Amino acid sequence: MLCSASPALCFVASGGDYGLESSVISGGGQLSSGGEYTAKGALSQIILPSSNGSFAGEYANRAGFYNPPHFTYQGGLPVQLSFESGNVELFLPANSVGRNVFDITINKDAVNNPVMADSAKITNANSKMEINEGAWSRLYSGNISEMFVFDEQDFWTEPFLSKGMLAMNYKDANDDGILDGSNPPVRVETLQAWALDDEWSMWGKMAGANLDVSSKRLLVPLLSPGVYALIGQLEDNVKDIYAFPVPFRPNGPNAGYGTGKTGTEANGIIFDRLPQEGSIDIYTIDGRLVKKIDVASNLFAVSKVNWDVKNESGQKVASGVYIWRVVSGPNSKTGKLMVIR
Image 1 (cartoon, rainbow, N blue to C red):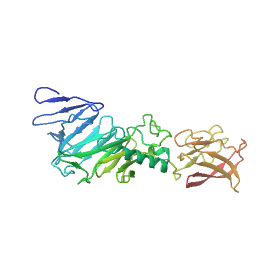
Image 2: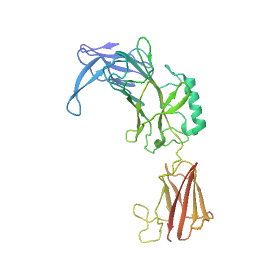
Image 3: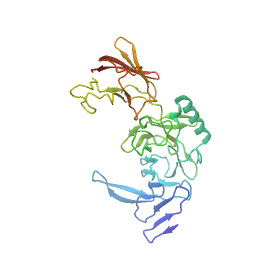
Image 4: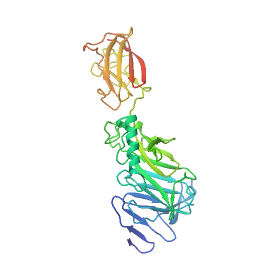
């Protein structure tokens, strides 16, 4: 460990992906950060103005020589701990752990290199999820963390005395609404926070999750230590589907592609907010099938499918009113179209 003159700024030796630069300042303190972690905690205090004009403290932490590292907190102070890479952030109010002094560790590789978690139970839980929900619920690297609280005598396994907040960040670098690296593609909007049930080796959905697309993270109330994951699902929701333009009038006075326009032969009619699997069936008003479109094989964006306004034989459909029906699993939705040529 290398330290500068007083106040001491100490650089702690790193291991693996968990390098940390920490400050240990007599009579004051600052945010501790570096390598993979940022932490606010327990050794010393500085006073900073808060947004409402009053004063609030931030607390520097010490780190042990562990991989992943342990961070020591005082029970009467709030806790903030996060990965610099943004995978997970932990917030606990003061006095949420029934200990005067306690340590926290967060491990981002709970499957291959667990600290306290049973990797066999995680694997078993993942297998059950995939069997029931399909490959969209596969657990991806970086989307799982274990978090444990302990002191010199034992682990704190009880619920927190005051609930905290867990922020789990996901990766969507190109903002296409698909979780990076997922195959089959997992839509960001289906991501949920799940907690491992040790007794049954199952994932249980956490209540009160809030997806913040702008910051690419899921916020969820944190009730106890444990193993947590971001898991997606097949999107089969049909309630938000709509078609445009309606009416479709590619030869009319307002023909064109865009807001307020009535369409072009080249672009046809677009179905948007579609599920990931299912079919679009187009019928005449008297119930004859005109066209059947498979959703999964025709998606040209995250949730869009184009109908060229032709029948199964490739001929342009005549002017008139048509009924569309989208079916995905147990869900279906019906609407009307009008074609004017």
